Image (cartoon, rainbow, N blue to C red):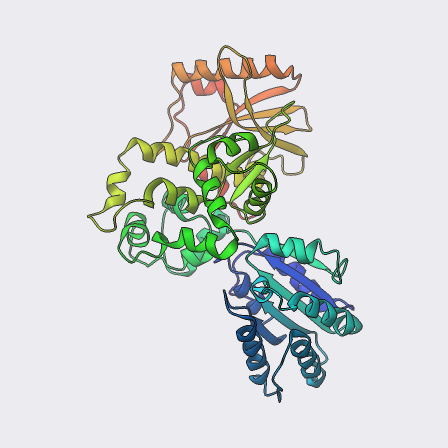
Length: 473
C-alpha cells in the first residue's frame, strides 16, 4: 500500500474489513477519474479473488458474457450463464474452490452499469449476498460506482434484499492540496504552492487529471495542452463525465452552467427560474445527484435563513464553463493571454475561496482551534445600508467568531485605509444584525501573507497563508 497517496480514513475502513469476523459488504462511490478502482486494487492487492467491471452502455448479454469470461480467466470451468442468477451461482461455486485462510475479496466495479433494464441484476446480487456471502465470515464484497445516486438509492438506502446488509460505505473525494502536492512530487513535478493553487483551480484534485501532467512543463503550458489544444483531454471531459453519470444529464449541465454565473450560489427557486426546469421531482433529483457526486454543495447561510443555498464547488467544471466551452482549439499560449484579463482575476478569487471552504480543518488547525467545536457559514446583510457580506464565518464554542477575508494575490496583500474601513463597517453590521455577544476576530487568508502596516495591526487579529492549507491532516 506504499504507493497510495492520502486516503487514510478509507484505508482504515478497508483494512478493518480484512480483520473482521463477519462477511463484509463495502460500497464505494465517487465521481469518475477519482481513483476508486486504483484504491481497491492497491489496498486489496493480495486478497482479490474475483474482479469484474461493468461496461458503459453494454447490453445485458454482453455484460453477462464478460462476467463468464472473468470467471474463466480464474481457471474455473464455466458454463454459459443465461441469467444473472446463473452467473452469481457460478461465482459462488468458484469461491468454494478458493483455499486460503485469509479474507477473500470479490470486487465488482462500475456496479450501476450492470443493472440494465429487465436484466434482474440487482435481484440476483441480493440473492447472492443473502444466500451465499452472508453465511461466510471470510468474504469481503466491494462494489464501486461513479453514479452516486444509484449507489445510495439501490444499496445504501435499499429497502429490498440488501436492507441493513451494508457494513461500510466510502465516498471517495478529490485530493486536497497536501495530497495533490504529494502526488506531483512523486511524479517528478516541482511546482511552487502558488502554482499548485492555480493548477488546482483549473482541475481540482482529481487524480486522473493530475497524472496527465508532464515534468518540465509550466502550469500555463499544462493548461494550454490539456484545455486549449486540439486534442486536449479536458476539452471534452465535461460532457462525457455528465453523460456517463446521469440520465437526463442535460438538466445537470444546465444547473451547473447556471451556478457558474454567480459567486455566492443560488436558492432552489432561483435555480428553477434561471434553468426553466420543471418544478418538482426532476429538479430535486438533479440537485441531490449533483450534491452526492461532489459537483455542488448545499448549505444554510448564517442565522435565521431558511432557504438553502447551492454553490458550484467542482473546480474543473467551473473552469470549463468559464474558459474552455465555446472556444476554438489552438492559438499561441491562450491561457497566458487569459491571465491578463479581468475575468481571470474574478475566477481566481472565487476559486481560492472555494478551495478555502474545502480546507476548513486545515484552517482550524492553523487557528489552533482543531479541538474546538465550530460551525461554518457565510453571511449577507439583509435590508441593510451597506449590503455587507462575509465569505466565511467560523462560529466557535469558545465564544469567538472568526470573520474571514479570503484574498488570492501574487504577492503580499496590502490592507489600505479604504479597505480597512470597509472591514470595520462590515463587522459592525454583522454584530448589529446578528446581535452576537461573542468576540469577532477578523481573519485574513491570503497567499503570501500581508504587508505589515498600521491598518493590518489595528484591524486583523489572525493571518493565514496558503501554506496553512497544505497541511496534511
